[in-house]
Structure formats: C-alpha cells, structure tokens
Length: 250
Ligand SMILES: [Zn+2]
Image 1 (cartoon, rainbow, N blue to C red):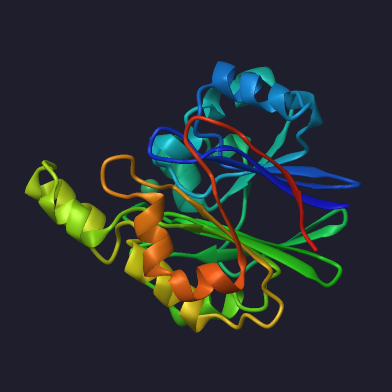
Image 2 (image 1 turned 60 degrees about the vertical axis):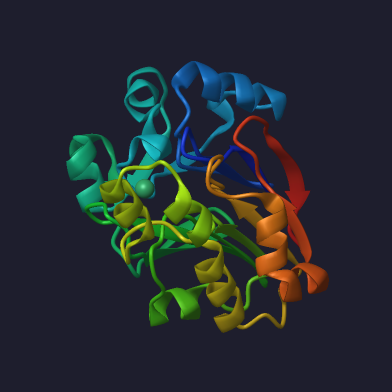
C-alpha cells in the first residue's frame, strides 16, 4: 500500500499525507490544531495515527499547528535546522539536512532544498520500492537538484500558485507582487509548466496541482497553460476548502 492524501492546500493552510502498510507521514501542518484534527477525521485518522511530521519551512500556512502538536502529541517531527531555528523548536525536532535520505520503516525520503524566501526551505520526495511521489510547493525558481530529484516520479504534487498576468493586474501592493513573483517566491503557472517539462516523465502517471491562489489563479488557466501535459497525464487539483481523498500511487 502506498497512498497520498491532503487536508487541503492554499495560502490559508497546507498539509499532505503519505501512507504505507507501516507508517503515515504528514508533510506540513498549516491548518490550526482543531482544523487539522477535523480534517484528519474525514480521512479516518486521528493524530495518534501519524508517525512522522515533516515541515517544509517556517511560513505560517505550513506549520500553524506545530507548537500545539508538540505540546499535545508524541509524534516524531523532522525539518531543516534553519526551519527549526526560525520556528523556535530546535530542541523538539529531529534535524535533517538538504540532500539527506531519511529512511523510516518502508519509506525513503529525500530532502530537497528549494529557492524560497524562508530560512532553509526543503521539500520531500518519497520512495517505496520502485514507486516515487514528490511534493513541491513554495518555489520561485528551478535548480538542477530539483529537476534531478523530481525526475522519474509516478506522482507529482506541484504548486501552481498564480497566473503572472492576473497577479500583476491584482490589487496586491507592489512589494507583495514582487515577493510572490521573485526567484524566491511562488511558482506561477509558467514555472510549473517548466518544472513538468524538464523532469523525466517516463513513469509519470498523475499530476496533482496545489497551493492555488484564490485571487490570482483559476483551474481553467492552469489547464490551458499546461495543456500538453493535462491531456497526457491524469491531472487533479487540491483545494483549500476540502480534503483530497486517498489516492493510490502506482
Ligand atoms: Zn512559503
């Protein structure tokens, strides 16, 4: 068994789940504790079912529940030193380094550094036997390491944050526009397209788009921008409001 699900994704909260016969990983806990608990229950889970939490970076929409989880639960938590330092949880977590491969039960997890305006942001690629799923959000540009690590996936979960034109025309202050659009910002649909274009896709089956901006993106624009791949692979979206139910990686 090798399953993926999400509690939801967007600027108000992100959380993803990977489940095997032996373990359940949570990547990010960006909803508050109560909301996380509620959404977990929709997937038939409680906090006590989670074996390991990985944090990608210190922005609120990725770690809102972490301090409460540390206080109330006994779950192993891992993240980079920079992320732990910035959140103030260095003593409570297991520090992992960019480039590490973390082995936990039947999973190997690669820690991949990404360009984003956080202290030491990392995203994660999960491998079980010959199957691989990679999750990547909050990246403002591509690196050779990203292309290498996200090649030969079966499942890709990728940010499609905004459409560049919609963002530029939006009422956001210029400083925020520049932050989102910058090399350390968020992936616009063209950058998402570039990532998909550059990775090796021989085994790729499904692409799941996430972290969509409510104001500055639309599913139809994403479909249009990545049309070539939308027609070729199974494509789905994760919303902010609802859970994304278990999907088997194969
Ligand atoms: Zn972020």
